[in-house]
Image 1 (cartoon, rainbow, N blue to C red):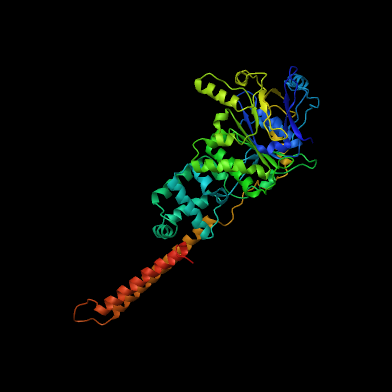
Image 2: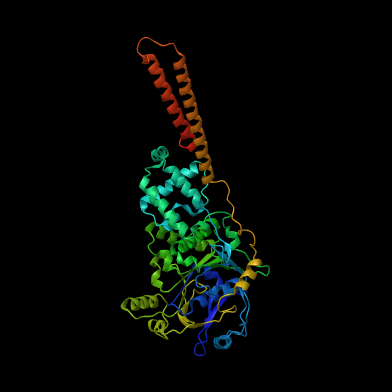
Length: 503
C-alpha cells in the first residue's frame, strides 16, 4: 500500500505519471466528461486504488457496469490486448488482474442487501425535498415531527407518517397543535398525504423502515487490510431521481454528523463517489443548497473524500466546484454556443500547461483519455496533464447474476439487513388510541342508553298526573345538566386517548 493512487500517464511523448496523493484525497474531486468518454472506468480504477490502500469506498452503480469490480479481469477478455498495450504505453509495469472486495446494496433489496433509514433519521428538510413540498408544507411537516417527538412517538416508516397526518387532521387535535406549535392547515396536510402516495408508487416505502443502515457497515476492511467497495445498484433507483439524490445526500449528511473530527489524515477514512451529481442540484431550494455546500466544505475534516461524477462541471454550483481540488476531465462536446461556453469554463478551471491549449484539447480527447490535475504535497493544484487513464484490474463490464449472488453470500453484512422488522411506533400507538377511544365512546353510549331507558321506565311507573305531563323546571334542569356532563366527559376522555390533552 503506497502513498498515492496511480491514475495514468502521458504515453511515449510525455511519460510523466499522474497520481492522486492519499493525504490529499479528502480535498474532494471531480470526474467529468460527456457520455461514453470513460468516466465509469475512471471511477472504477479510483475505487480499486482506494480499496488497495485500505480505504472503504461507496459508489452508485447507475448503469450496472461497476458490479464487475468484484470479479478479476481476464486474459480471455476481448479487450485484453488493448489493456496490456495501454499499460505498457503508460509505464504501468505492475499491472495485473485482480478482483476488488465489494458489498452490494440495493434500496429495493433485489440486487443487493436492502438499504433502509427511518423517517425520523431522514428529517423534515430532506423529506420535504424528497416530496417536493412548498415552504408552507415543509413547515407543517416540521410541526408534525415536533409533535410526534413531544408525544414520544417514533416515526419509522411511511405508514407511521401517514397515520400521524391523519391524526393531526382531527379538528380538536389540529386546533390543539395549532395553538402550541403554529397554524396547521387542512389543505397542507392533504397535500403532504398526496405526495406520500407518490412516494409509495416510486418504491420509497421499501427504503423507510428498520433495521436502519449503520454507517460502520459501510466502512469495513478485509482481513488483509483492503477496503470494501460498497456498490449501490442504482439501475432502477435512477428512474426516481429525487429519491436517488436525496438518499445520497442523506448518506453524506449522516457521515458528516456521526464521524469525529480527524483533520488531515494520511489517507481518507472513506471515499464517496456521487454519480449523476447534477441530480443533487436540480431544482434544489436555497436552504438545501446551503446544507450541501456546508457538508462538502466541512466533511473534509472528518476524513471523508467526496468525488462528484457528472457530464459537465457546469452541473455543479461554483461554491461546490471551488471545494474540488482533484480533477479528471474527459472529453466534452462543443456543438452549440452553450456547450462551447462550458468547454471554456472547464479549461479555465485548470492550472495552465504551456505545452498545449487546454480548451482545444478538451474537445480532442479520445475514449479513456483525460486532462488530470491533482493536488501536490503542499495542497496546490498541479499543472494540467493530458493523460491516458490506466486500465482496471477488475472486470470491464457487469458481473453475472451468479457472481453477484456468490459475492452476497460471502458478504460481511449477510443477515444483518435482509429481513425487515416492524416494532411499535406512531402507527401502532395511534391505532391503539383510536381503539381505546372507540371503546370508550361505545361504553359512554351504552351508559347513556341505559340511563335513558331507566328514566323511561321510572316515568312509565310513576303515578299519572291530572295536570300537564310536561317536566317541571327542576326536572328539565337536572336532565340538561346530565346531558352536558355526559357530553363534556366524552370529549375529555377522547381527547386524553388521542393525545390532545397535555400531560
